[in-house]
Length: 522
Image 1: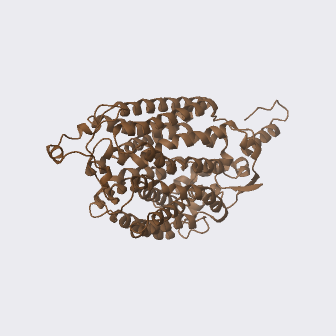
Image 2: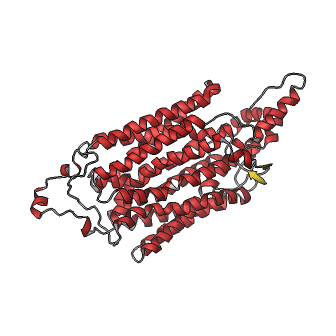
Image 3: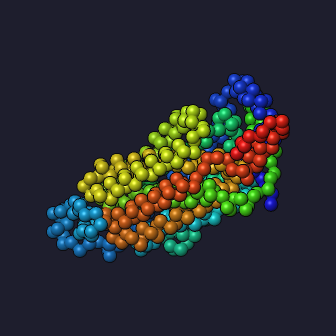
């Protein structure tokens, strides 16, 4: 079987034109400034797209608290005198860790949807049913037809689905779920082309910081959406859908004049920038090679990467979907506080991104021979730290609000540091020729947690007590431990022998060293 690889530079051009590309990068970069360039334009477009995509996705975790009408069966049977005297939230969760305790439930819901608690808990996660379905198909379509149409369509159609949701939800829960699944399909169609277009619009010497900047939009969107959605929902729970959906739809339409599939299609690219980017534009001359399915399916590093991502992503999605509800039910924050404080984990992730951008290149350059060991060490250290931090949250009571917020901030930092500096870059080292295929499979499997975790929460958390939420946090510890074991034992940063790059390097080495003992480059 033969496939197109848009994430790998043309192998022959890497070998025959390496010296020319290096000298061209040095000379052309001075002639082709970044400011006002089309490559900077696309990087900003990708950054804004990630902000909007993540904002739409994470908005559901908070706005659902305003959508559903308070249910009489959720109120605890306290006398009016007891409630009036306000033997306050300190009794609500107490100091117990796993033992149930009596609590006074202050219902936060102000909406008009008559949904059950199980429906309310599982609704935000239904987005990921569609998201998982779309990821592998979108990658294939981006390879075949280019990324522009999928990029724009993903934004516009997802925005339309969110605009329709407030009109559909009051009439039928099933129809609302179908609409959100469709939104997930449209959202999933935007992830592979966003990455694919960087092959055309980012020079190798600029690719790391451009990708880091573009994908930091996901963290920025997660940080900003909670206070924004909370403020907008003061005017009605439908308002955030209309505002975010309208902005995303308008932005998707505008992108039509800023994003293009190739250098030849872009009407505003200068000749200097065309020359600067031309050697990296693999989309114009893709390399065809057979996929070694047997080697892929029997490779320990491949399984280590995929399952590490599955276990690690469980924690990220658990935070994204449930932090607002945890703070409302277990920690007894009010809605205005939740609007700001629910961003604590993502603020920690943002600091992690900054740390990786400014430090990882230094360590990669100085310790390249020990890179695999250092990544495993960093990942194990971060996982151990995350487990300890979650344990502190479990042991804390709702009186210790500041401590819990600090722990969530640090959890976001350690979790993202394990991702960005630990396991995620390893794929570009051990199987760069199949990075699109393997990462697509990993993302598809990892986002199953997006619709699985809400069902788990619904099964474990019946009344919202802190003792119930502690069992959910224990699952976070469990999956972190699994990820640490799998990555620590089976991961690799060594280029695999079945990768075409390794075969090409070996062939070149054998030819150039025909009179000497050939070295094993893999």
